[in-house]
Amino acid sequence: MRMNKSQRQALIISIIESKKISTQEELVAALTEAGAEVTQATISRDVRELNIVKSSDINGHSRYATMRSTKMGPDRSLLNVFLEATIAIRTGKNFVVVKTIPGLASGSAALIDAFHNEEVLGCVAGDDTIFIACQSDEAAEELAEKLRDLQNQHGRHIEA
Image (tube, rainbow, N blue to C red):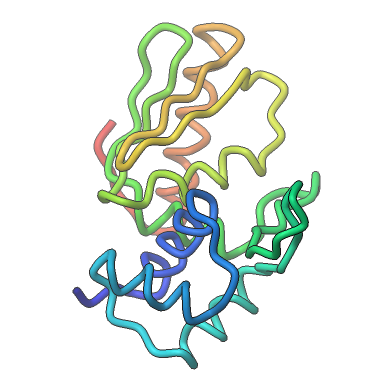
């Protein structure tokens, strides 16, 4: 399947957050298994752009990991993933539900986490859905509006 850069990078983030990936070859194999057509050179550039680093797990084994954004806010690659992947943003009580293209919820949720919003209690991503628990109904509405505004500012029109 042919993916644009943002979709591919979202898939990369999702893969390295859900599987132990130690080499670019393993990452290429995982992407291919997920249906993405990629080259080693493309993956090398994506790893660099996404600030993916090698780290050690508790057993001392090497694996790729994402460097989370600082309190300054999300980096551009997380924004691009969110903008490309989001289909709909809805609220229900103190929850915000974000629907994404299948396989891209985890990468998109990284943007929500990068906001460091004190009103957000937690964020859980599945395959194509992100559930965001907020402190109050009002906080959920405000967050949903911010996310919709972000989409609109970049020329994206999504379902409410």
